[in-house]
Length: 126
Image (cartoon, rainbow, N blue to C red; front, side, top):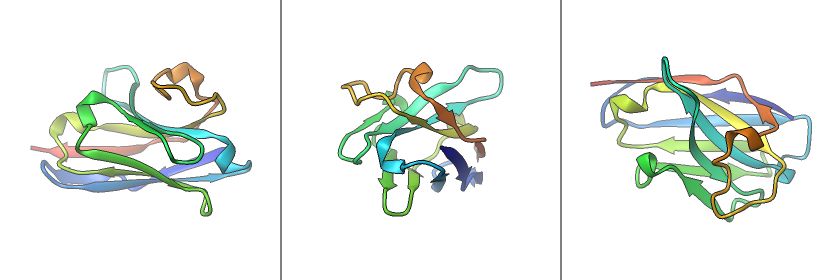
């Protein structure tokens, strides 16, 4: 499956962004999806994941209450609504797809993702 992330940009602290990820090439609803970020000089980190149907989600503790992950299987789209952004949210955000079955801590294992998009830069100024 091919993934194309978009929607990043420069925003002030406290602001909002909505990231989108367009999927193509395979049946989108067959894949759990996730958002992973990588800050400068750091390893990639799990942000959020959603099950194939969209009925289950998992969020990193650092973004709970601020970010929401959702998907539209009819449109082959994945979203990340980012509210109350903080400077520490600054990173490149990647969308990724995984064929593994959903578990309680679904999507946190970055090695479980089979396909990755190219990333979109999010910069939050203080």
